[in-house]
Amino acid sequence: MIEAHLPVERLSVILGEIKEVKVTKRGERRTRVDVGADALPALLELLKGRAGFVHLSAISCVDWPDDDQFELVYHLWSYELNLLVSAHTRIAREPGVYVSVYDIYHPAGFFERDIHEMFGVFFEGAPDMEKFILTEWDGPPPMRKEFDSEAWVDEHFDWQDYRPDWLVDLEEQGGGVAIPPDEQRFSRRSEDEG
Amino acid sequence: MSEPKQFPVKLEQPGHRETGGGNIFSKVFDELTAFCRSRSMFILHYCTGCGAIELPPAMTSRFDMERLGVSPMVSPRQADILLITGYVSVKTLKRVMLTYEQMASPKYVIGICSCTVNGGMYWQSYATAKKLNDYMPVDLYIAGCMPRPEAVITGLRELMEKIRKGDAVGWQDYYRRYDHYLGNQQRLFGDTWQTPTNVVAEARHYGLFGNETTGEHTELLKQHQEPLEALDMSLGLTDKAGVES
Image (tube, rainbow over all chains, first blue to last red; front, side):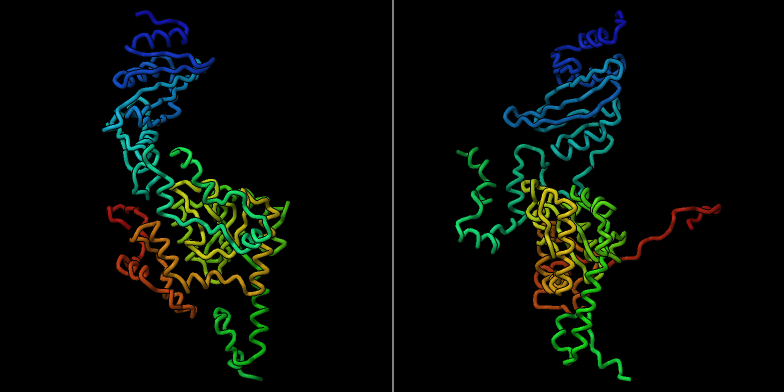
């Protein structure tokens, strides 16, 4: 095939080579690429090898419990094009297993390890899937939507006593706190329920 | 010349102050000690969270904490004040507990920023401790997000005043009600939580062993406690014969 001379043209040629890819131009320097889970490693390989996207800035994970899916977003930066490509792909929430791209981008090792402990997604072929930041945490992966942080907090911590003597004195004089913290704290939840 | 035992001054045991043998000098000595103590304080140079950013201006020429006799200290063994300057994550709290127990008595804890009071903006977070005085006795809270150096210095002056009056006795509470504090630590860190410090023995040493020093939680600690072993001090170097030195 013919290599295009300009890097931008090269990018469009590369994106044309991948099947079932949806390219959306989000801005001057931002391009969103939606790609199937099977084709993503090949896309990254091409972007790195042929279009100069040498910098994987981050991998994000988004939990979509209603769709029963995790969305993985690979943020790639090219110093030649000054362009950010975010490659989006979706994987099934159960069993939540995907392939590691450590052999293409070594920094991916850290991001995948982080996602593993925060969301429980397992990356096959990653060099290390041990705990990273939450080394002393033995609860469920805390960034999953079904993890109720507030309930966990209620179970493990006591709240500060908000009715000290000086506040009682103030209330006797007709002052005090307009909305008690207990009502403020759970206001959002009761809105959701109602 | 009078014999020294006519002055039964027991500095570390304020509980015995009333039984000073009717010697008026004992109280004078206590007051003098408390005054001197309040004028020479070392803050442990250990900061958590974001409030630490207010300490450099408080320490240096702009606000000059040292004119109050307060200065930073690198080692917990030689520090008087443990300044908790912001949110304490559960992992950090373990280190803070170790640090606190290493400090020599009398020791004082100041909680700075909203996060140490009630969790602050992290009230909903699974990772940060909400109420610092559940885990260690806090002598003074300085609220704010975050408090300005003026507030920090006002807080320190308040603490100095408390020490001078003999009100800053949180460290004694830790010994007297160790079971309560240990229970809260175990609730958060798990049943196997232990520190290298034998707090119960220290409580006996200071004469602060009370009814609540031991209890169900210290019993639980005893079940899991492993004796401390000396650290392996080898450098891992090998000489020519291949023998580890």
